[in-house]
Image 1: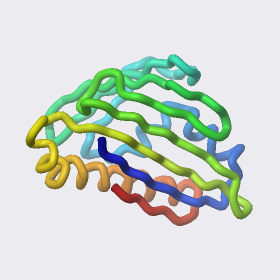
Image 2: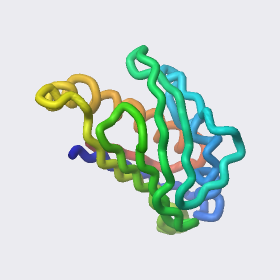
Image 3: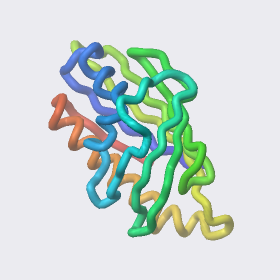
Image 4: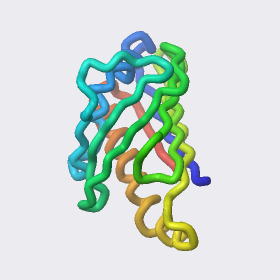
Length: 155
């Protein structure tokens, strides 16, 4: 199991930040264009435990369908999405929001496992790890542009 953690502090209050994340339609603005991301589930999507969301994207040009399920929903502090179908053997992504220093600390914690069996370490080093870093760097840039603040990601 691999992990990626990212955080961004923004000067914006939690009651402004969380609703942005609670609207699944905003995921498109946080996803790099090279992934050609598209939400297939009709909008608006009511977020709660058990909500299923279907997406389509391209990973290195290969079309992929992804289904995630919201497995924890605790507004305005936390939610979790888990892959039910998609490119990873497993994917668990926790989003947390903490009031801090007059703003909000946005944290992402991802646990994932790539497919690829004995090639997994090589795939992680050459493809999966660098790709996820690019995705989360893009996301941090978009969040900084929207809310202000400082971000970092690590895998």
